[in-house]
Image 1: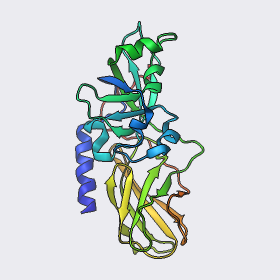
Image 2 (image 1 turned 30 degrees about the vertical axis):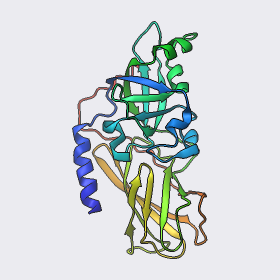
Image 3 (image 1 turned 180 degrees about the vertical axis):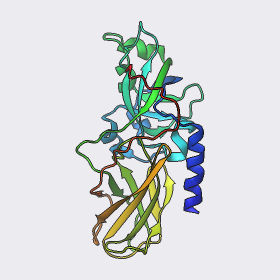
Length: 259
């Protein structure tokens, strides 16, 4: 079943391939950053550590039923009198339910698109025409990490939140096994957003493997020792691996490096 879901996602993704291409849309903002950190991706206050306050929510084509959580985009306003050509970089941390725009940005990110001295003017505009493209997320000094959520109950239930997912990638499957095992893997399920869970996991220290897709390419990444036998809820654990894959896309070149 997990393989079928992954295959279906891969086929659907091919229809909207070429993430690196520039797309046209509209963007607005929210004044409270908490509105983009406590929602559909489940990051909570940790969202601030992902994008340093430069956060975004987006609709179905980019949110992808939660698979898009943690992805990064470069976005710029198209009004040259109001906005700079540089734009800003944002991390997707929530779903946008506003049908008028594809993006809702934190006010910090929204103002960062403006020319010098025009930050208040862009806020007054409210909604602006933008162009955007997906870019790799960079966490140079930070490995992929998992946070054990408070709802976890050893030995019956384990719920994890993925953090610091680098590159231009999606994690579409996670398996868990006892450290040292080479065959007894149990699959986890995406509960919502960046949160995964399972009620089938062994006692003892745990290793994980992550199914990562990047464009039409995919691979398993093994994290040999992640959770100690005495793991605690509310704690963030380093996986010891870093994801830096760049999407392989079966499409014509479209990124001319003009940003």
